[in-house]
Image (cartoon, rainbow, N blue to C red; front, side, top):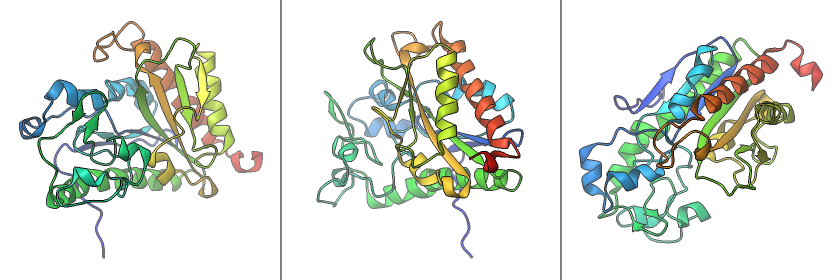
Length: 282
């Protein structure tokens, strides 16, 4: 019998909740940098931190108090990106590999193992070994997705419809562009009522909203959103200028407003999913 992969200590945090049929995923807020990782970097910790979605793990605190569950990566995205498929990998990131990267994101250096930053160049002094890749997959990436699956499985024992909200932030957008982007893989990862509810909440709280442009959702919502099975997944992107100071690291005056957004998203979507007549209403 296969056993689920076991995370390394502190690689991911799992918060169990049964108050609402909602699991929140936070894959890019990890900031536990091992000194050996920083030593491997050409750019130093400050530039590795550019890969993060800062403070998003703190923004969901109110949502968790409502009874939502969460899976949070404590391992930095610089180590491995849980929002990329295992095959979404730039061969240049791994010693001895060759060939073309399979996606535009991987070609840009932002694949499973991030290896380049725009305007700066290569992140690492040398490529990662195959053994190093296997270790990161076994200790972080696979346990992260196993934890999401387990959380949704547990909720499915009680509710017919369950929802995954994958939580992200994005660099400041131009003034005329939306501050919140809701991604549902163009309708394939969630039923319309989920994205409609998210858009209604964000608009009501005063945020400008876009859907699927420029972010339609990554590997997490693609993998775990199966509406035909009552499993819905949406990605939420928040403009960092809404909650951070100009350093994009420190909580700013809008922090509580964005935290309220995640709380209200969880409340509204969770209550809708828990309605006994949800299937009949669709």
